[in-house]
Image (cartoon, rainbow, N blue to C red; front, side, top):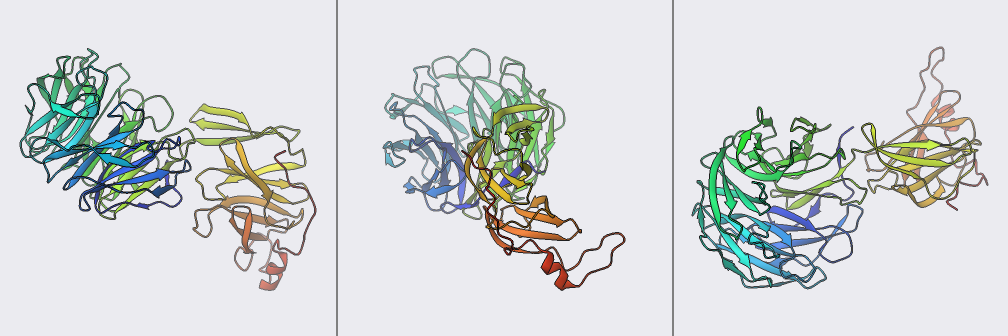
Length: 515
């Protein structure tokens, strides 16, 4: 099955031509929210998450001309999350301070080099607050800007620093093992990554550049091969590949094997543990293919495409971030869709779910990753009794979480709407009992509304479908107008209708209650 599915309500609207995005809890409610740098509307969209993979728009925040990149972090030390945005046409970086509720007040814009594109945050001078670096596309430099602790920034000694030709994206990470933050920046026109090693005080020394594929653009950092140092992955926009650059432990990088094939024009890349096995996987947007490619790591920087990859998103996606948007314990994805003014929310469906039921009726769930269990737990503190049997699971209410379909010995169906191992609601599936001759055979989205429906079969072979919305039956009808079974003939259409499980057989049988 595909590793990712579009979340309920996805895509969600942003401003005009979103280029990049960032994620953090912006309003302090415990759920991840999203920021989008909108290149044409000259603002940053704020989308508040509800913890189930859904988002609602907050107040867009004006920034400078042509914002290209947005990064989030606590810039003024007050415990809430602020952000910066690079202004491509303004030669500056906007600084926005959070009022504590997901609304923002602008601080003074910070002048940087000519045509800033990528920005990154990190404590570059070791004083405990977040500084930033910008990649200046036309001046072929990076600007290092140091924070005074109150979100006011001044240029570091030696900044701006010369890098390669047409620097685009930048990442801050510990690259040489000395515990301070270094800089890596992609150089789009000469097919390299510049490595700048920190002297410990926010000044930098250039190390040898690392070779990439054609037209490097996006970059991300993480320990890809499990050896304890930080490696790099780079989008090669002109070659439709990813370069995996492994660190020798001292900030020197060499390519690991052949580049990974992506979709058309990979643009931005991120790393994180998408499959719960403890190592870092990769996700990249494909701007020319309107898709996302996902690669699973074998633990030694060997990568294979995830099931279903590439995944369709909005038009010309730029930025991409990971976060557990539906709070099920695994990382999901958000893309900034430049061409359709939206974000696509891709919900991670990697965990298989095993439902157990003891002989006395008690249900339990194991959330699985391959052969490993991510979670083991009882399904609530109750037992519906041995006459109730777990038949199937499916997403009946469209919240991107699996629910449980039960059937009693007398034929009565019921649904538990779930959040992980917690029962949100339990109710009969409809208001009737089709009788013990009808058996639940499968679940599936038969009408394309992103909610699971129920497939029945009578003891005589007749199939029927209930189209569902949560535990409500929208319609029930025969599956087709005939049955073809070995040794039988095709019955009249009227006999099929009569045999369907319909509301004529009401029952007072109790559902499996949650206590």
